[in-house]
View (cartoon, rainbow, N blue to C red):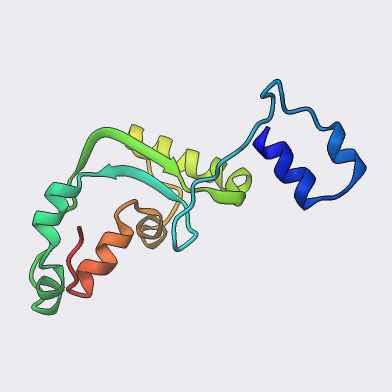
Length: 133
């Protein structure tokens, strides 16, 4: 009822009085997105182990020391944050994820994989020497 009152108040037209909200038949949709507007696809990162390994990433890179491989949760993958472009990007990301799971050659080069990684925002902060919480 509250929504119907809002509609009638904000849109003073006759048709708004005919809107029936009593059956709760309305549907909504929510699209997941992230600040940089790029989708996420690949392994789900283990934050605790990555934070321990990479909290000093800025100095490791500056000193040209070896950087350990990122630890992820085993057999846990994601495709998310597709936003409004999901219809066009989902097939390629699905192919990438299937290749990753089965150990086949990936259809994207390494730089694009890094751009799609779920830990990319953490890595950006670690590269600047900033803490991630």
